Structure formats: C-alpha cells, structure tokens
Image (cartoon, rainbow, N blue to C red; front, side):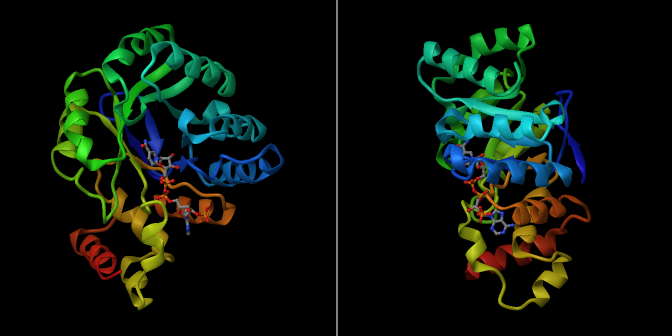
Length: 269
Ligand SMILES: NC(=O)c1ccc[n+]([C@@H]2O[C@H](COP(=O)([O-])OP(=O)(O)OC[C@H]3O[C@@H](n4cnc5c(N)ncnc54)[C@H](OP(=O)(O)O)[C@@H]3O)[C@@H](O)[C@H]2O)c1
C-alpha cells in the first residue's frame, strides 16, 4: 500500500486507514467482530485508526482489538477530545491513555469544540511525549472558515475533513492551505456514511475503465487521487470490506478524466 508523509510532521502513513464510528460501538459480547476487522485490515497494510469519545464504546473496543491483534506498536492511533470542558477533556485523555497503551499518536479536537481552550494543555502533553501530533476536525463543510482559522494558528499538524464526490468543498482553500503549510490531511466519510455506495454505475465497464473491482474502491481512489490527502478512513464492520478497501491503496491513481467519470456516476445516482 502507498505511504504518504504528513507534510511538515515526521509521520508516514499508508493511504487507507480505518474509521470506527458506529461500527466499533458494540456490546462486550460482540467485540470479536471489530477484532477480526482490525486483524484483517492490518494484515493488508492498514495502520491509521480513528476514533472519538463521541463514538460510545468504540475507543475501548478499538484499544482491545489493537492489543488483541498485537498491532498497537505499529498502529497510528488517531482519536479526539470532544467536550467544552478542559477538566472533562483531561478525563477523556486519561481514558485514552488506558485504552491505547499510554500514548495517543494523533489527538484531534473534535468538531472544533472549544479549540482555543484545549490547545494549551494538549501542547503540554505533546511536550511530555504522551501525544504525537495535534489535529482538528469538522464534518460540516459550513464550518471550514473556522477550521482555516485553526490551521492558520500554526498549532495543528493535521486536519480531518469530509472529502468525497458529494462533499468536496475542501477542494478549495482548505486543501491548498494544508499543502502550503505542510498540514496532514485525513479524509473522513469517503462513502458519505455509506450513502454513496447505493448508487454505483449500472454499466460494469465503468469499473473496468477505472481499473478497480468495486464501486467502493472507485470512491476511495477518487479521494486519494488528490495527493494533498494523506489517508482516507472508511469505517466497516466487515473483514471482507476492510480487505477490499485496503486493496484500493495502491497506485495507479485516477487522472482528471477518471475522477470526472466517478463524479458523473454520483451525480446520476
Ligand atoms: N470528525 C468527525 O466529525 C467525523 C464525522 C464522521 C466520521 N468521522 C470518521 O470517519 C470515519 C468514516 O466515516 P463514516 O463512518 O461516517 O462513513 P463511511 O466510511 O463513509 O461509510 C461507512 C459505511 O460504509 C460501509 N462500507 C465500508 N466499506 C465498504 C465496502 N468495501 N463495501 C460496501 N460497504 C462498505 C460500511 O458498512 P459495513 O459495515 O457493512 O462495511 C458503513 O456502513 C468514521 O468512522 C469516523 O472515524 C469523523
């Protein structure tokens, strides 16, 4: 799988990661499922995983899946602080240290909640070595103005944004600024929560033209063919889907014509 270096930060990641929203928020009796997904994904080269205190039991389940598969040391764990309160933020971080073996590789401020308040104590944790890099996320394109403000402070090493053929407002100031400043880019929602998967091409020759086996792979390649993006994080509860997604992480990447073809299929959907 192709590796990409996060701009100015000293981190190289394989281009396909793994999201955990909903799919890892499972009951204790169902944790074998996410465990098998982590094993399958890491077996095929995935390294970056993404979670949040917002995702119910997902962080704890992910932590156990990583240690169960024996891959915590090679994983890049990205998770988030999601609260207006510094006290609660520190509690979320303490829990994460427990889930992820005493370190969070990428700590992101979720949905920009109280980002000015959190940056200070998070930067102290970076100095202590318990956090690797700092990031900021927002799922809503209408909040990109504020995300740009955070990027311009120079205090975040990476951002997490939606970037798919339906939600591509980032392909303006956000991605240009990220490239200019050497900021890492994690693309969330590559399938728009799965919504884009229901409307694939009716003619199978489209997949042949794109050089992929599945529509999901076409969507992942659409995102990753923009080289300003470093990693896409599809979420899945299925080992088969995790492995098929990982297979989209190899070049060749789409040219402009192929990206337009994917956009046309989505627009017809
Ligand atoms: N920071 C934020 O505000 C924010 C917001 C949203 C998301 N995120 C992050 O981004 C991650 C991804 O976004 P998302 O979870 O919203 O949605 P997504 O990754 O766009 O779509 C997930 C859906 O796609 C399906 N899927 C995955 N691979 C597939 C394949 N190869 N074939 C068919 N179906 C497939 C999954 O179902 P199966 O289980 O059946 O595979 C699941 O229902 C999240 O998990 C989270 O980590 C962050």
